[in-house]
Amino acid sequence: MGAVFLFVGLLATPLAKASTEYLAPEAAFRFSAQMIDAQNIQVVYEIADGYYMYRDRFHFEGESVAVGDAIIPAGKIKFDENFQKNVETYRGRLSIRLPVTAAAEFTLIATAQGCADQGLCYPPMTSKAKLNPTLIGKTADPAPSTSAQPIDSQISSSLQSRNLLKILPLFFLLGIGLAFTPCMFPMYPILSSIIVGDRHKVHRGRGLLLSFMYALGMTLVYTGMGIAAGLLGEGLAASLQNPWVLSICAAIMVGLSLSMFDLYQLQLPASWQTGLIHLSGRRSGGKLIGVFVMGAISALVVGPCVAPPLAGALLYLSQSRDVLIGGSGLFALGVGMSVPLLLIGASAGTVLPRAGKWMNEVKRLFGILMLGTAWWMLSSLLPGVLAVLGWAALGIAYGAYLIWREDAHWSVKAMGLVFAALGLLQLMSAATGGKDALSPMSQFRGVPESRIQFTRVRSSAELDAALANLQGKSALLDFYADWCVSCIEMEKGTFTDPAVKAQMDKMVLLQVDVTANNADDKALLKRFNLFGPPGIIMFDRQGREIPHARVIGYSKPTDFLPALHAAD
Image (cartoon, rainbow, N blue to C red):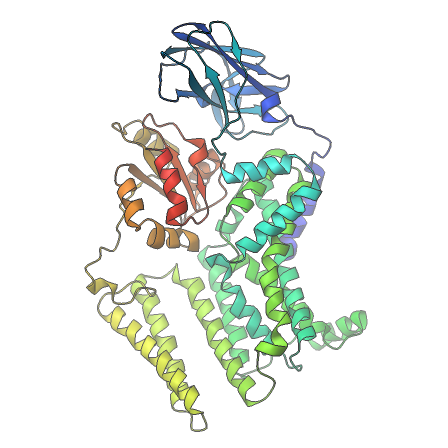
């Protein structure tokens, strides 16, 4: 399956516009402002040839002063492919008048967005200018903006520099950070089980080689999938979360786990092994190819959710069609994500037990972990109580196996008691209506099942209707999916924080559930240049997006609060 995504990426290579040089946003849309009298500001945008701006993307406000409604001349109506609707646009020179009430110097904050005819659509641009009502006719140069762009837009902008010496190290470091997100954690027991299950004597060199092949499969498929998603503008990661794909991959994981119990040996057909041995001259060729394929499968199913570096790369790819730069960034991201996996392999000789009786016990433990990974894949498709029952059965069965083994050491029996106790706790939770395996018995703590109540919106029309009726409140739009690990972590760890909850209680809370990934879901994701959850958009009291307050990927309460305050 990984080859399919790589093939899609290679087919798309002729679409790359390596020769196209785009202007920086400040050069494409040159901003200036001046006081034309004591009560009016003139804002001018000098729009470069081949570029245009959107009327409905202009927003103006002042720091500590009241700015009136902008007086904007009529623009030209065109059908825009980026938004799939008729929009009003401007070219050349655009002059806007803003009424203002100010007695002293103040700062004007202007937000605007534009695109290039060649297909690149810039993220919203924020400009600032210091003005004084006593200085009539003096043009103010734009002040450096202190409002941060969304981090995915910042990363997309760095890609636009086309400087690989800057892009590759940046994405490599971002990949290392992404390796420690919850979505990556299931990969660690999968790789460890492969190393432990190897029939060869485990040593550092062998473990590192197996880890390298696993990481290479993960990185290449992840890069190919990212390129395809960016060029097609579709959430391929979401498409891979449909029940059929998850069920097949879970079945593969179960098959691999059963081999850890020595029920059978997994190996390639003899004819394939002969060919691989002939090509590589090494007896382990078939094993290495199998590990590579396992890394590819893992990338498809338990790869990371959408995070800022991934969102930035996909945004750049979707707008520029530049496979060389975007694909290079994604590959460096995958290499960075592989660093912990390589460390696991390099430490095999000192951390993992040597071959022998203990090795067999470790193999069975990793077999259980792989069964757990398979159940985790399917949990999003099942009712909460049934998912909890599955964890109960797994814990009780493995615990009983360890306890009643006659030749087991006392420490093994003690570990069996722990597994059995955890399984019984899950069984009691399910029997009393518990639906959350991570919080067993929480139904008896007097804690509401959902502390934050969202209003679901299913289409752009429903969203527009909700934003038109905010009744003086700001709004938050949350993109969520049942299969998104980071979304669930945000729901349980961030939204329930007292300070975050107090701030969210002041807002209109909207949510788009993109679990089904249907046409309406895709349209809403495309409207906000998102490629999947989690993504949170903030709106002011007039229903206008606050560009610098976007949150992409998991965010801790301390990091999430500033975005909420920006919408206050």
